[in-house]
Amino acid sequence: MSGGPPPFTDFLEGHRGMVYRFLLAAVGRQDADDCFQETFLAALRAYPGLRNGEHLDRWILRIASRKAIDHHRSRRRSPVPMAQAVSADRPAPSDPLDEELWSHVRSLPPRQRVAVAHRYVLDRTYAEIAEAMGGSEEGARANVSQGMKRLREQMA
Amino acid sequence: MKTKQLKRLAEGAQERSRAAAAALAALAEERNLLDVAIGTVDSPIGGLLVAVTPRGLARVAFEDEARDAVLEDLARDLSPRILESARATEAARRELEEFFAGGRTRFDVRLDRRLIRGIARDVLATTARVPYGRVTTYGEVARRIGRPRAARAVGNALGSNPIPIVIPCHRVVRAGGALGGYGGGLDRKLALLSLESSRPHMATGRWEDGGGG
Image (cartoon, rainbow over all chains, first blue to last red; front, top):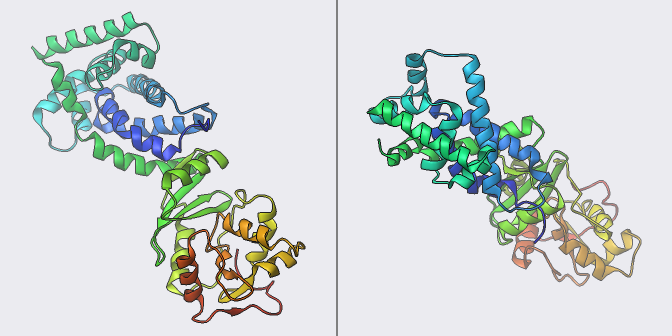
């Protein structure tokens, strides 16, 4: 109609919950805030150049996926011992099941972790995951199934 | 394991995202990515929405103007990079609160006049000089902008004032003493004039050195 994207504050309000859910599963509680801010700052930077307000959910998930994967890369450059990393991720006492689950999800390769978060936390289709992560639908399917296979093996 | 379990990782996202979203405006401001900060003020004439840009206060909207419509206009006319920010709107909100408390008779906040166009530039620049507690007429404003026969156009321009209260278009009334019109409704115009003086009287003599804006 009017051409440009909607006021950013409305866009933020409409998408913050989804992005945060994705990031909690993709990067964990400790780093979700940082990735959230990086995601929406990147969105804000590009925002006036958007031609319209369509498919903003797909757009923000592309940015969030990139941030989640980049975040893993920067993390990998400075490895932290697993036990220490897990406890640092969850400083507050919490449900032991979530704690254990996260320690397993955390051990997945980044693209598998991000793909699993898209599929089973946001319930995205493989086509949507492929679009968000850049790659083919087959690739998305493979990342999800390999990730789940590994999780099942670890948790068996 | 069951895939359903994975959703447990995302518990609490809604509240956490609210806090994270609220923190975004300050980060955006540091990076010069906050083009329009919005905030709200409670006042005796209802809630006010203020919009502040790096250049200054650009918009004051009354609560019965639809928020969505106000924000969409700001997005189109200024920038869609609009975020709520208590910090960036602090000065404007404080001055309005002081004004309504009766302790402020002129505004010191810088104004962003980009939403004022055409004849309204001259009309509102002139109106901004009508002192607190005084009123003038549409005809007098028309005369002062050098268009003495344009009283009606002056009325329309005042009605388009994007920064009411701060640019005091409520201080312009009809020659016979009738209130005339007001974008925010005549009740608000009357309330503002009553706040400024129990008996508003005609501004006489020089008032270039008076008001705010």
